Image 1 (tube, rainbow, N blue to C red):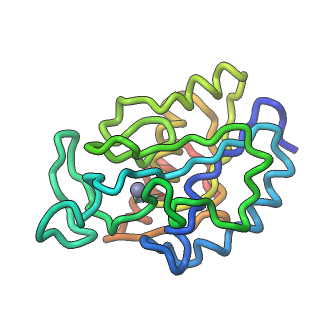
Image 2: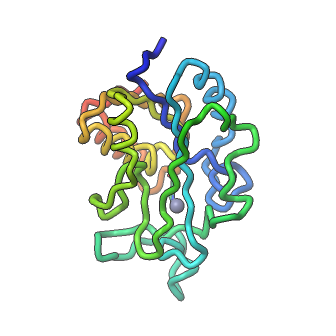
Length: 201
Ligand code: VGL
Ligand code: ZN
């Protein structure tokens, strides 16, 4: 059983990342009941919610002529252009209806700044603008994290790598994650996580 110093971080289990959603991840809905079950074991639970304005610069729709899943250069580096997804206040941005949200103490919303995407629960894609989650967890005495959710190769991996750099002991429960897998991104994310000493089940 996890102890008081261990937290469960549930990444972006939202309608738009589930089948039928705007950026659907294959099997994204299959992990919901397992995550609900895992919540019973943790005293500290944080949910993240991808939360973009409609004119967000990570959306292909906001770059005339651009196709979804192409790459552009942003001031902070290369950025994938996504189909418009998780727009603030829409059904697609809501948590999957079967996800239990009552056990969570904190919901971290990310990606709300127009000009910068945020995959990680800890830092935006410039790798330096903090979300505040580090302070929340450390001030509560949390030292170890278990990560689950969507998508394995983007928001879960970025969050896990940042958490590890910040000194948390990190476990990613792979069976409770699903991937987008864009041009080998899943294999790349897995090897980066393994190289960082993240436990990947
Ligand atoms: C995500 C792409 C764009 C994710 C969020 O949750 O992995 N991926 N926004
Ligand atoms: Zn997003």
